[in-house]
Image 1: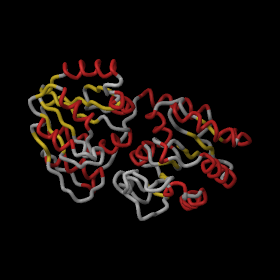
Image 2: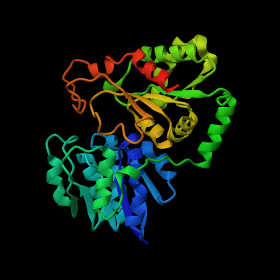
Image 3: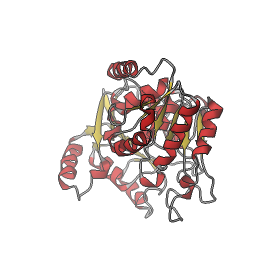
Image 4: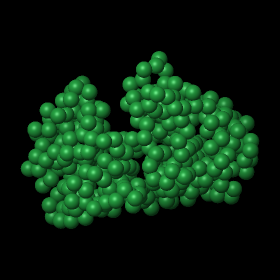
Length: 354
């Protein structure tokens, strides 16, 4: 079979949004074996997808000359890859992603013309000469899930936004781990909610005291429930501060931060009554598995990446300002759109749901 490489080395949330259109690539490229080059953090997500034959994980933030050995190794690896076709369906490309695509050997390379969100100096436009086929996009504002659909439809797909649904695939290992821990912590006797206080990058941070207040108020009014705290290793300090502040409720709080993978965390979210989180990958995971979620969301990427799908389940709590859509180039000394969201604003929505 011919081989197709899809280049998508972005974050977890971006990859989950892309999952809504991934299967359409198998219908458009019927005689191709599909490989994916993704970020290291999304390798497990990609490997669980049954129609992807090979997954290559890279860390784009380290693929720079200042990390010389890492850069040298991956330059060597990428130059040895050879494909019949390479596709980069990313709307807001950057120079690192373009460099990765250019290194892979292929007679046909397809990219989105996109925008300059991640390249304010418009060097991406200059790079377009290196690619055989540049997909011209509709320049009106669109949600990211619509952009993904636009790209594949211009390659011959036939998707409708009304039927698009993101998805997370689980392995047997994910399921067994979930069942073991769920039984250990007795999560299904009365039910549980999930809290994911991580924030991706600092400007999205919602102070830990706010999370403490939300959990405290929730358990005061719902004493039979449990609270499962989720996150990666880099959230261990944050979750530790939260659990220490709520030490007197330790029998009601299960802290799985850094103890399970992202996909296994998503399995916990699937059976949860509710997820409360900031605008990170877990919110997209909840939307993919159909769990009602509350997103504490600022205005940097307002409306582009979230919400989408069932807006009765995918809920935003925000503090509206005129500067929304700033791409996190904040005009204030601190992000007022996040700071001004109060725990009571979030808990009000929790009460409405429960």
